[in-house]
Image (cartoon, rainbow, N blue to C red; front, top):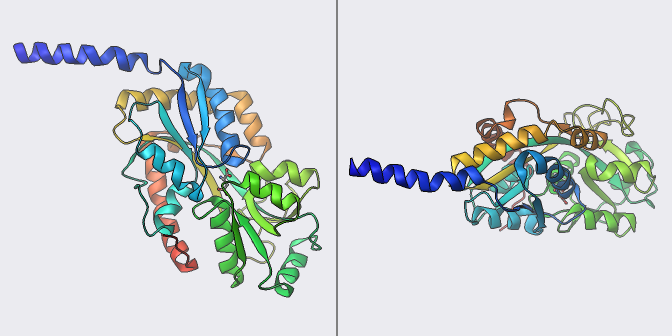
Amino acid sequence: MRISFLLAAGLAACLPALAAYPDKPVTVIVPFTAGGPTDKVARDLAEALRKPLGATIIIENVGGVGGTLGANRVAKAAPDGYTLLLHHIGMATAPALYRTLPYKSLEDFEYLGLVNEVPMTLIGRPTLPANNYAELARWLEANKGKVNLANAGVGSASHLCGLLYQSALKTEMTTVPYKGTAPAMNDLLGSQVDIMCDQTTNTTGQIEAGKVKAYALMSGKRLASGPLAKLPTADESGLKGFNLTIWHGVYAPKGTPKAVVEKFNAALRVALKEAEFTKRQEALGAVIVGDDRVTPAGHKKFVEAEINKLTPIIKAAGQYAD
Ligand code: ASP
């Protein structure tokens, strides 16, 4: 009798706290610099989440070490639902790329739902003489050993795409790492680096404005509509089978109460259908997730499958960091 009374009293003490979640702003860590593709997803999503979640979302950019610095910050944060992570395919690539990673992608997080899928583009500095993919291939061949390839660090989407691209060409370029593709884009615009792979959410505007050269869509199928619909795929351009799509999802530290996970996930599902959010994302080539991967279990299953799919590909392309 006494034990059940104590249990009931304990439960009652916990319930108001959970029922009240969130009762203060929620911080979402973006593991790359502001103004880049992941940051853009996070800021659009933060806006869409405000109503269904009933809280303001504060975006904190923790760029560096290919996204692993920010991810590690969240892995070690208090599991109370107030420090979350918005991360991309790096959740699945970092375990294969780093010999020592201070967190485990599958074990140290609660999965809150997948958000979107984004195609990649291969772009070049405005002063690059090549105007299409065939010309770029010839230019790369003629400039072997001198080509600079920008990326957002080992574990980033741009790094993975560049790694697979170099592996497909059987060549090595000088990689120039940044804390995100926003600063990398600045240097590309200024012709300080030669080429870069980056997500359409960050490149569409620059391509449309003619500020960078666009060579190929590095994902499987041409975009159905929009300004990049005319851009040939890598496969069409001769890189048979090249197909890389980036995805983003939301994570909480392991041990975050189930009720908090469920509350956030419910809000996320509403936000993913919000008209302004979907319009903005889709205009930039992103596809909002509408299947089972929006559930915590579906999200985790997907990331696990991505780790299993990408690990041997990365190992075959052969690059590690410490
Ligand atoms: N997601 C990174 C960023 O937002 C870029 C990348 O992963 O390539 O800057």
